[in-house]
Image 1 (cartoon, rainbow, N blue to C red):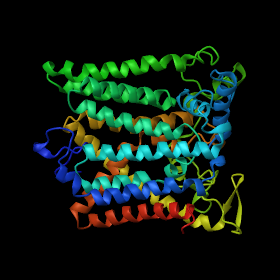
Image 2 (image 1 turned 90 degrees about the vertical axis):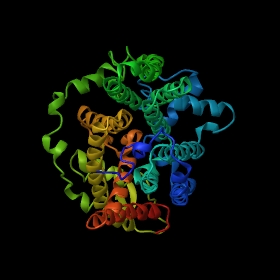
Image 3 (image 1 turned 60 degrees about the vertical axis):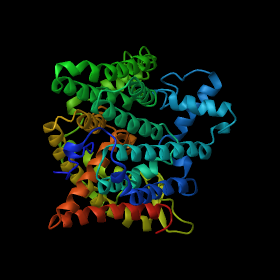
Image 4 (image 1 turned 180 degrees about the vertical axis):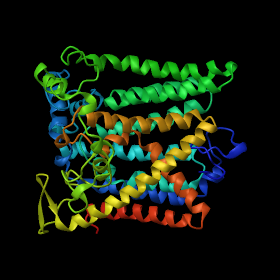
Length: 473
């Protein structure tokens, strides 16, 4: 897939490319459209307090319990204290600090939701900054911003009270700074910022550890491809920054080492000998899920009943929970007097079903096209020896593999072990990939315009679902 004059993932402008910053003319030409996409995305976040129930997020009571434990005991909770005690403390320490300053009294969820939305708007701003720094195609930037701002699981998740939203922010920032550090010899300031972004991600959620192997991919390829005389100047500083971030965060993860039976990155099932026995009693790792669950596109009855537990298999659940509120956690609250029924223990309006059903084919279309564009751009980046692009793409691949591993290790679908929100830490490169693909389709013209139109309709379907969630449709 030739991205047309800016073929690299990072948006290099052919032979005239002199660095990561693009010309002011290239940035101005699409500014109005980019601003419109950004404002549209931010508008959903600003409206969330009126439409997104802050008490209905994933494990919200458990996240608040972590904050309350710090307030009551002036210490971090032990692993068995609650479902979220396994998490690193940055988000919870921040909320406790704000509580001490008189903000967010009693850890009220409506007030805590505002903090999540601040993180969300910052993430959108950081992502836009990254696009304007590296992606030369204004057309691609607009489409990437639209998908990043309208993806239903993200619009929904941004209004929740948990550590996911800051985790998505720090993941996006770390990916951008990693690409920046791998594009040219980084300064001390760039290296410090890179290390700090990695540390923030590591101290927010365990997903941050995936930045390590992704950085190793970028640094390793740089070492392999660079002339010997340039290796030290290009690699030493970012490598040290990443190593220091992991070294500083390791004691935080190791605090549960003894309690969890020797796990540095424990789960809820590692909290006690009894809970570990439950895992040990399960079949061997590779026998916990069937091949049909892992590989077959078995959507089952989810076409008709688009809520849990009607999807069958890893990929259908992932698609349904990314492009729709599959677990029915009140993304679309029934309007007063609206006919509804109980789906997964919560009310769901009958009128909402058609919107949810429509998001499934739309999500499949976007996911398949993104996968194809990902493969094409990864191969092109490999040919062009673009270590920064490959490191960024590695984050997306590793997050997906991590989600697959979690679904296999904990084969309990009723616990929501597969969620599209779990992937959002590393989806910024996928938004870029999809945007570059859309720009390429439009530029090619002819029959490719039909594929472009299909993708645009899929995105409009997601927008319609978002608008319905905010009582506009």
